[in-house]
Image 1 (tube, one colour):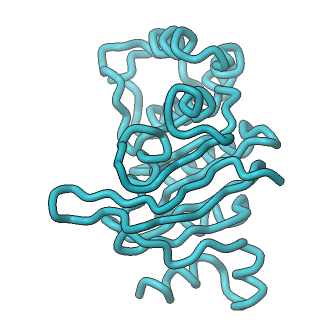
Image 2 (cartoon, helix red, strand yellow):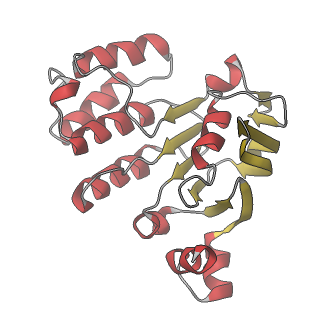
Length: 231
């Protein structure tokens, strides 16, 4: 398999606080990767750097062989940890916006998924429940024909049924030759869909390994391994 994402020597600081410290790793095509770590470990900063939302002179990010820029952003679909859409917008307004911004956006697929989950395109964003707002965000993100999908805490505040629905959306939408990186604290609920796990702490990588390797070598689940590592 080819390397879809390469991160080399990524570092970033907010004032005197170092959020990332010389992070390097790569992800091949066709992989679903979990990004795990305690609050403040650097997960969101890392995802934003890959998405091109944060820039730094230190290190480099290459996606499909291109540095972060117009070419890389055209193949990356990013969902932030907080919905940034105006409460006064209707769902159909967001569909219009995505269709205008992204040539690879599949509006028909998005509308079908919204219908499946009982979200009307005439609904106002501000009137949606927390669960439906998160489903909307994930559906919009995953309805592109992107090469790399980035989801930052897609389960925030969701009940178990809503989390299961969001997971169904993710699993059903990733093309075989694309990759998905998910940052979340809900390790147990996504463990079975993961190919690899990246654990980070204090801005550095603790390890990046195959989930099957972790289970076979330790005899423990990913959740148990996480608890041992960060306890």
